[in-house]
Amino acid sequence: MKQTTTTEIQLTGVPEHYVLCYNDNCSKAQTCLHRIAAKGNYVKDNIVSAVNPALYGGEKCSYYAPNTPVRLAYGMLHTFDNILARDIAAMRNDLREHFGNGSYYRRRNGTQPITPEDQQFIARMFKKYGYDIEPVFDCYKTDFLF
Image (cartoon, rainbow, N blue to C red; front, side, top):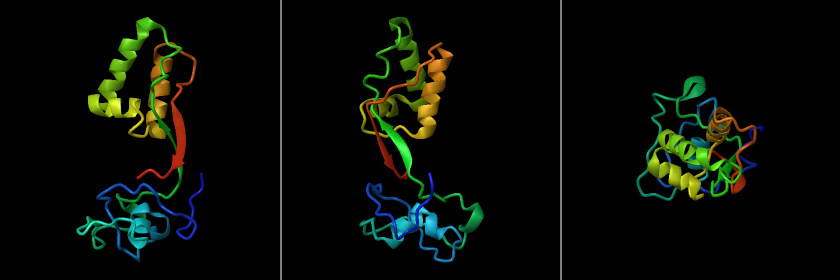
């Protein structure tokens, strides 16, 4: 997906306490979610966390978050509907080990998004167990990856 310019996007769902960037001189400022969130005044906290402009910015900034929308999946309530009963417990255990117990259940119940990388991990796990089908998630939403 292509990046959009700051004038084309309205951010929704900016996380509480999101790290902001006030570096106008950064070469990536126009496409960075941290800078866009700061410039658009999306975070309403009295005290904010910010990237130190003296230490970060430009091509090698470790905080750079591109404003490229991604396809996020939500919920795994029916992910195992076409899986043999003998494999379900082991597969769920693999997911709990990968995500952590709480994070697995938040993804399963649809309260935490499943990133494209996590979707690929789950698809690889299906193949590892011999299933040549794509995992099914409850719904999908295109949004920014904060």
